[in-house]
Image: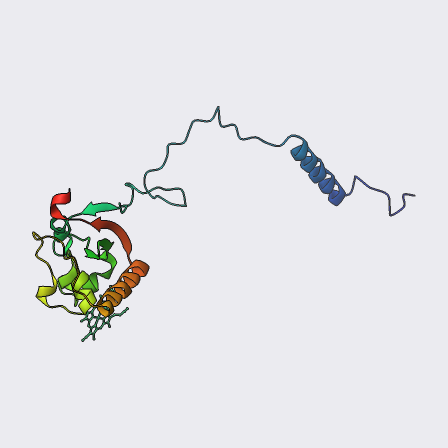
Length: 174
Ligand code: HEM
């Protein structure tokens, strides 16, 4: 008579276990390698269909650091162009995400596409704060230390919130 501890291959559970172990050992000894050479290459998807394998039709827009003159900056005043730029103390910020502030109906729309340094320094929207775009850059030499500090505070605010996308130079510098 067979004892209970004997391995009985005739039992269905033992047979299944034995086959599973055989299969696992075979997988370890002969791991399957994907046959990439013989398989026809899948074309790279160009648009989303389903699942996760997709790529956009075109590359998303990138922001390049550029040199702007006051005349080049002006078209980015939010009226015709979705991009809105402004400059403070020679640094050009892309404030497009702040369209509520700088768009045509925004509270600070006067600064859009312009050198906003003086207005930011003096905390003023007055039109005299903006240098005409065909004039030389505002040298800001008459500003008081407090006004300079105020302007630097705005530069900090803009640096933390928006992308720096260029520098502002004189119209005849390019
Ligand atoms: C009646 C006076 C004013 C009120 C009630 C006011 C109100 C505001 C409010 C509520 C914000 C939004 C703050 C935030 O969400 O971070 C803001 C931001 C701002 N304010 Fe004023 N403001 C006033 C005057 C001025 C003046 C005179 C200037 C001139 C420089 C100015 C320039 C700005 C700028 C540049 C921002 C930042 C917008 C941004 O983050 O892009 N504000 N103001």
